[in-house]
Image 1 (tube, one colour):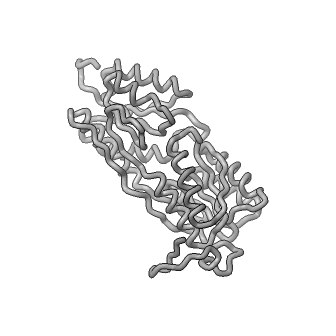
Image 2: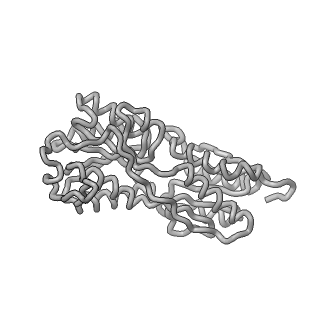
Length: 301
């Protein structure tokens, strides 16, 4: 990179999707800017149509005086981005769980445990047939959630139903309609983001179902959309702004000449709101799945 003037931006690239930029990442960027602003720096966000265009953007930024580092997210199997940025000499931080950080910093998010907790919360209410509308299957974190969902359902002796979405509200609605139209429809649905959960709740209503009377819904990633929904959506809530702050600090450490950090973000917590309750058919929810409540009244398999 040229030394003609100090770089002022951290770059982040998103591939365009029907949902636009996920509200999750808008909050991540806000957290990054909380850390970068005192340094006179900013986040430079770009959207591109395809993976090859993202790599082109990195090569262009490597020749730029404006971009000092890059944040990577939404990892895929054999993801080439970290290795390319290392080859270009661009400091980077990865949000996720890379098999090879390629010399960059890492902020890890435990998708497995969070998914298990979501299933446990629904199991404690008496749900035995639980559906999930996932994100894109090529993403590593989707694959991790797939494994966790299957493991958690097997552990509680239940039945899993899965549909694939793309993080848009329309795909959430379509996934919900697919799952609810089956022979043994689920009494609860988990959505891999907030927009899909909102779309799924609308679809449930179109089928004449009440939430949570007939169907419980849990969203991944708490947001304003969850809080303003009617009823408000229960969610697996992360400190998303804090995640952005962790990413910015880890990247700045590398930019300042320090060793790359590998840190883990705090686990998500379940926030119960009006979209979750016991299944209508279960007169004794705890007994129906063979679990006993703990001292707090919460039950787990």
